[in-house]
Image (tube, rainbow, N blue to C red; front, side):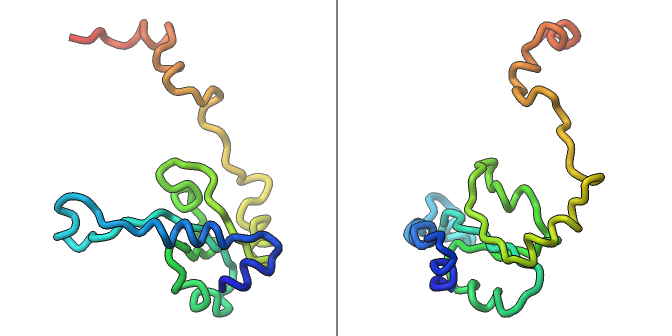
Length: 132
């Protein structure tokens, strides 16, 4: 599996090594409760058909395998940190058009994404009750 990620021309070995070396022992009582180790998330492999992909990548630490129908923002940006390395299979990338056709694209819920600016705006603060 490591060889296949290098043969794409995009060297992902650094990401795999970072995830592997990040295994640390958790502080606190979590060690006793069967949550002994913490590890950073590595690359995510997105596939449409499981042609032995799960068997090839399941032994690599930090790598997440995901079917394209289960695609989720929590998998793409864990902890709200955008920028996780995604490795797509060709069939999964082609299937995106079927999953997200032009009429079902997700829309922005907010025009201005700066939440603190919205909350502290004069229009909102006039309506909100004063603190006691």
